[in-house]
Image (cartoon, rainbow, N blue to C red; front, side, top):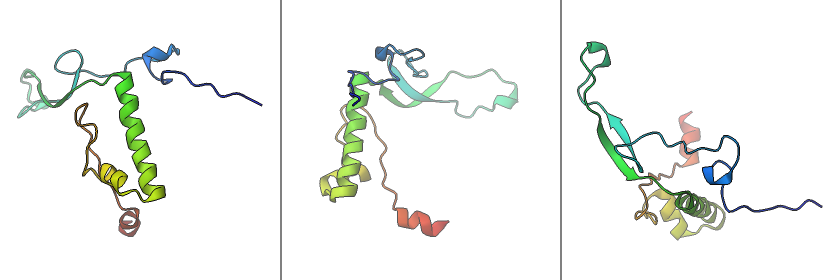
Length: 120
């Protein structure tokens, strides 16, 4: 019988020690922050120099522990909602409740699979 072993870190994380496991954060306005770069009113084909980057949706980069906490919370909420009909979990999945607002911005939206099937 094979034994399953648990590690304290995920396989993709730098903490795992796995070959190729790196921090894949792109870039942000400063180290430790993530955001969406925007170039308002600039056309890259115009021949004008690239203006300074403006940032939107800027959030603090999550630690590995925080990433696991947020993902485990949303996965658990999904299964509690789908399998048990848990209304509190449903509120998390639909985006009505944001239990991790102090850590990060999560854009959650429930899509009704019945509506998706009809639109195809």
